[in-house]
Image 1 (spheres, rainbow, N blue to C red):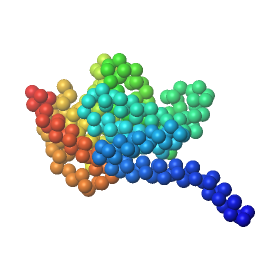
Image 2: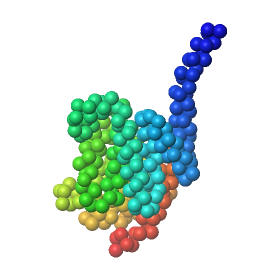
Image 3: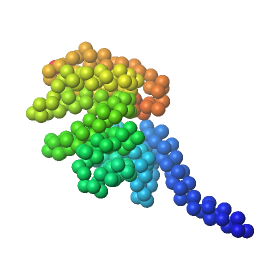
Image 4: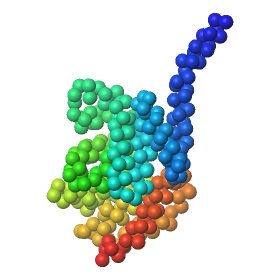
Length: 272
């Protein structure tokens, strides 16, 4: 009888943990089907519900990714801003669970200095914060772009230092766009560096189609470049790619194909 009581006490003690694990597994299963709008919405809703109970790193990171994907697939600019802003907040929740980050905040250190202490084991938290913040900055009004510029830069600088191949060479996509699109008044705009970064991104993960789309959009249409031939080449490669060959990123590649088709339709407007 005593053993039975101890056993059931042990089971009851583990129930919250097991329930949480089931929730995370359910969220991951929904995210795998993120190209289905209903599945993506359900993934986001579940993630939000879990985080109201406790700030779990894995859930916060996955929610940041879900918000990012939702923003990427949304046409309305204001809606994009809202999704990417939510993605930043989810990323910040993930950061708040990191011991080094918490210690730094407790010691009242600047976030820029704290980020420099984070390593590869912390990458998912600061990468998805950086990714959402960069997309937010792209679509935000000029004053808000300037307000986050410094933070965007030190987050991505750290990604470059720790693991530039993370998320299919994501940091190369960022800096490719950054050096092409940053306002010239900053003195950082540099199409040559932009091309160098995009080429490294394509080399890092040629099957991740978004890199080629951004390469065409940001670099090829730049006022000092206007490379129509490369523009067509990159976007046609995207349209001809077999997304089924890489099922883990098929949803992202499908969105990239849609963007490529839209950009080609704007070719005359962009170059003439």
